Image 1: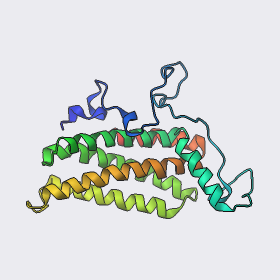
Image 2: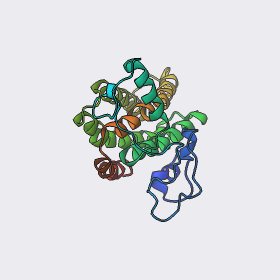
Image 3: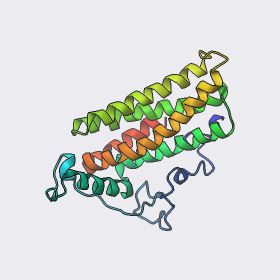
Length: 224
C-alpha cells in the first residue's frame, strides 16, 4: 500500500471508512453543524460522561448496592461500551480506526513484502508513540490500573517489533508469510482491545479539560 492510500498522508479523497471498525458508530446528519466538535464525524448512541463507579476508584455519587461491586462493575462496563469518546479518547479511537482499516487492507490483499508493510508499520509506530506520550502517561498519573496500561504497551511493542523486522527481511524466508500474517491478526485484535479498554479508561480517569489538551498533542504525533 502506497503512502498515497494512507488517509493521514494523502490529504485527499474520503480515505477508509473509520466508522466501519466500530459497527455502533455512524455519521450523524448534523456532523457539519456550526460549533460541532472536531470529532463530530462519529455518532455514538449514548452521549455524555458519568462519574466514576464506586468500585473503580475515584469520586462517585452513590455507594455499591447490596449486590456488591460485581453488579456495579457490569453496569459500568455497559455504560463505557456505549459512551461517546471525547477529547483524547476520541483521538485515540479515530487513529485506531484508521489503523484497523490499513490492517484489513493489507490482510485482504495478502500483502507481506516490505513495500506493502512499510506504510502500516510507520503509521503503527506513530500511533504507538502518540499513546506513549499522552494516553499511557496520563492514565498512570491519574491512578488508572497499571496492568491495563502495561499490557497495552507490551503488546504494542511486540507487534511493532515484528513489523520492523519484516521491513528489513530478518524473518526466516520459510516462515516469513506466517509470521507477518500472525502479526497482522494480532494487530487487529490489539486495536479492538485498545478501543474496549483504553478509550473508556480515558473517559473515566482523565478530566475533560486535560483530555482536550492532550487530544491535540496526540494528533500532532500520530498524524506526522
